[in-house]
Image (cartoon, rainbow, N blue to C red; front, side, top):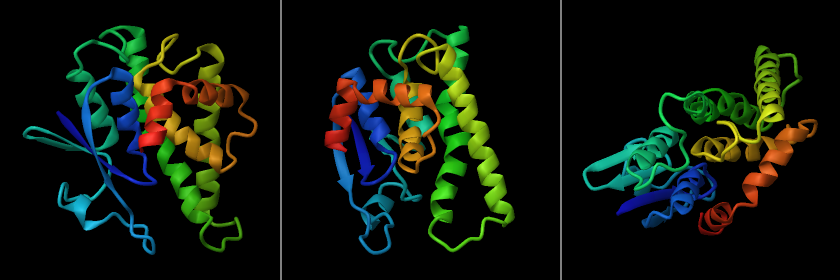
Length: 202
């Protein structure tokens, strides 16, 4: 059975959501951030030297990084669900968005969050760069969701789990106010039964 090491206030809720969607049994181990430093506890570092979540343990396999964890679970799922068939257009769209969440979108969104924690006059190089990247990424997302309901096509997939969690962070920061299709997309994902279960558990 897969053991999921989940850190509160982290993006590791994705893994819980995926397992709930697939109805795969798992054990959930929760780790709590230090209230003052917001750093992960030593209990998580004892599982993986990066002390980041998600981490899964499955027999001899200990795996970190959201995208890798998602692919591992999908590879070992009893049915080929939440991932389009290999070598189809939808499959490569799935791959792009599965990795876009952390590869492209997370940097500007998370950086903008950290930038808010310090005094800035808006004229530093980083301010302009992050603003440009956020606009570029969110425009691409909005245009994609204008022509199809989910990132890999007409069907919900694990790529949507990866993207939804990052888009929720962007939404909480007020970055989606003008993104009508993206907001509708978030509502569709958040209405799913497995999403609600992951929210409750994680």
